[in-house]
Length: 398
Image (cartoon, rainbow, N blue to C red):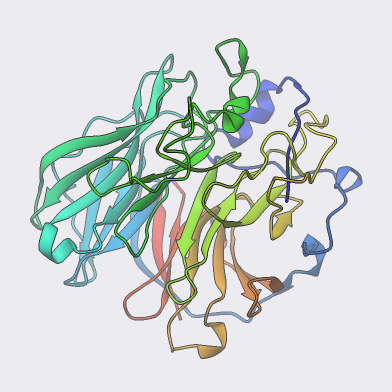
């Protein structure tokens, strides 16, 4: 179990700027690499993976962020500036889907996740996460709309983060669905120092149960609060909170065979994490962390504390993880149950091998050569990757 106590260093403007769009963690000086606990795999043990065949299915995507398959095989793709695109029969429609709201497309903000209701064929609902507001005050919102194959209708915001924040960092925004048709939504901690709220560094809100910042929230499909959420009866706690102590989760996946819920989380300077999520647990940020300040100073003297959950994997130097998939296809049965995590800074896909107990048994890097924003297993069992570039690509790996 883990926790994190903070040292309130100031971030150098140039360091923030270098990662502003990425949502990424900067790499650390090897001499500053923290000691790992025994269940963590050092970055220098990562092997390269044999080349997979890469097929570019679409390009000229402007900072694509997320993708989702429709029942007819078409693929919905979000572009961070605020466009929802569709790839039909291998052809990217040049006209964006109408009905998307105005988004705060600055820094890391914009249109992010797209996700289909588990019974989309019946309900017609798709879900979007996006940043809304201005530089002085913005927040992550979750909305749903009906999609008829051509346009969005019946658009409604079903959730918004409890506090508006300044700046343009750490929106989180991944969505996964649980078997009971509730959704988990990742919400970032709001940003790096010196970004503050109510007189404190905003990242401390990750430990405040009365805030959505730095949390996983669990919602019903209409945005209402599930009655069995872990903090529903806790005084002064936000009832939507499902887990807390997170910095900025941009990879979230459910293993349909084991029920395990996995997340990849950006650290600051090093200290990216792979976590096995459980309801009601505290993942420690910023009280315990393997990260350092962007200036190189210490955020916390602690990497672990009773009552807080330790990561299953730590990356230092950082890979800046974004996008996560659990492999379930029988095309490569030896990969069943393994994880594939995208890396923005590392510009690769990490194949994370897991044993039956869910512990990391090994890791291999699959070179992509561009910043990987999302990775999914498609209906055909192949892996699909979105690259976060001004001319981003949709790539199929076989």
